[in-house]
Image (cartoon, rainbow, N blue to C red; front, side, top):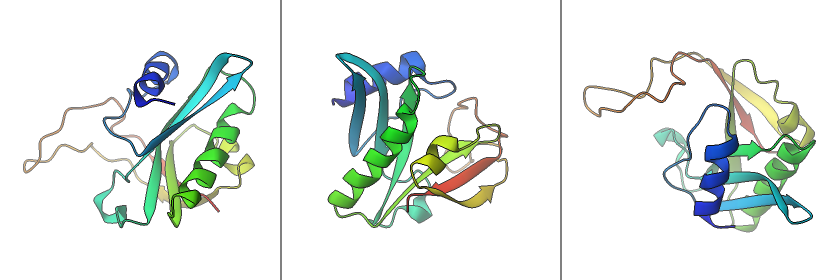
Length: 141
């Protein structure tokens, strides 16, 4: 699917993030002719993970249709492997169960403490509303 269509869906359905700025690929799920979910995969946000062999699922959004998130996470891993990548990661926030990731065969690999955000004197960034939130790092397996 196109990046613009995926971003429009995310703007409408994602609970706490705006669409990302960049991507390597997008995938959508449909029921009959209705789009029910999208996932966007890109380079890892954390620079130290951007090794040329790793991709990150940066957004997943659904309209709430059951099992759609799991389907999208599994599809992202299949596509990443097909593109020659060795690793696919994503993050969840505190309060998100990770059930869709576990159902898709992903495993929790790290807890990340809350951070004040990405803003630094050497590289100013605007707040996104997700600062001070503990996160969990997951890896496709």
